[in-house]
Length: 489
Ligand code: MLC
Ligand code: AMP
Image 1 (cartoon, rainbow, N blue to C red):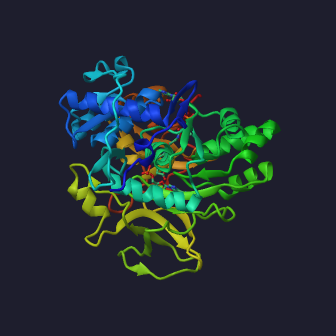
Image 2 (spheres, rainbow, N blue to C red; image 1 turned 180 degrees about the vertical axis):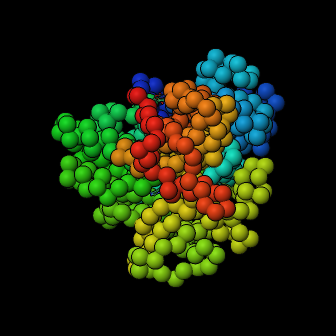
Image 3 (cartoon, rainbow, N blue to C red; image 1 turned 90 degrees about the vertical axis):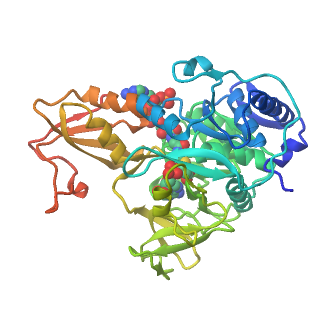
């Protein structure tokens, strides 16, 4: 039987997790996760049950996430900043049997939850099986987010492929400041470190100084979204002493959104070393990555990982046999890391995965002769990536339309040097223009703060085609008659 987290079965006193001045060794983590698992069973929870986890970055939450994984409970990590409507949607859809919150007061109004027990017990041994491990909520173009069901095998296969590509071992300490409710921070950062038997040093919150300090110390690899690397480059330009940390790292990894070539070059100029990119999705985990054994490849996310089949297809999903770095097609992937489907949404699952197991990503790319992939954009203008978070234009539009002063609205992502894309709302007011701050706050309160528009433009009407469909590509800098207001932050 192969185990999901082999080192936890033979745990020792090496570091497994650090955040601030709190640490867990592999032995402590194994025993506390075992205690949490036993506690869950004693409360009547059974393998296969879903448990929502208020995913703050702290030791108790890590113990709970690992305890659930070991005993077969399916964690549904929640962004602690989820607004009212989105939280109600996720809880209504996932129907968790329990909610875990390290600080139950944070969750008191929403549902009963219990603090983590401090009891210790031998950890259960979780095999790499085909049972669900996580349900991760991710946005689509329209409607509310969908829960992607990820199995233990999806995760193990993907982490082993990444370990191979990055030479990732038990000697590595990953440094990151990513949230523990998405693939990047949770699956790669936490579960990846545990699967290889290494450690995760979580920074709590991202600052360039903290990242460089950690890399200058015990940290060997940095996992970051492009926004963080952009801020690192800005900070290192202003304070050259930060460069030492970047130089000391074994590997700097960027993902969750494309890192512009200019940012690659800037970091290279500053630190003399480059960034290795990898590309993935919540539903497929990581598909491609640049090998750590070779040089970084600015503009490319590398070839498919071992075990991942990848093809480029045209609009009719016919395969394009192009290796010219020019012909564009949608990326489709197949392999052991493609998810089990969306919870309660067979229709949505069938729309993205065909009968042969191919998953259609919606990403447009070209392929080089050596197989390296260059991501150039997305098929839909309604999927926005901001700071590495995926946001569906439709969910933000639906939220804004609830304001009685909004007659029509179109939400788009506009190029932003820091966030990659920033969310911009074009609003046709009903009568007098509504207050911009309250529109922005509505989205922050109902959905989540990272989905809030950073700018709101008032317009007389939205550009439409003959069929009446809004033509978002024609929205851009509003005309001279339009009233414009930016967010003041
Ligand atoms: C601001 N804030 C507000 C607010 N305005 N809160 C309520 N109402 C308002 N109107 C708060 C925010 O919540 C936040 O708090 C702080 O003020 C700053 O907000 P921000 O400007 O939105 O955040 P920012 O500093 O820009 O964040 C940048 C970032 C973040 C890079 C740190 O975007 C981030 O963590 N990105 C990671 C996304 C990620 O992990 N993606 C992986 C998806 S998996 P506070 O306390 O939060 O600072 C995937 C697959 C793959 O994609 O390939 O990996
Ligand atoms: P999510 O649904 O949050 O998992 O986001 C997945 C999407 O992030 C993908 O479909 C891509 O559009 C984008 N993405 C992730 N990594 C990269 C990358 N290295 N380059 C470009 N886009 C990326």
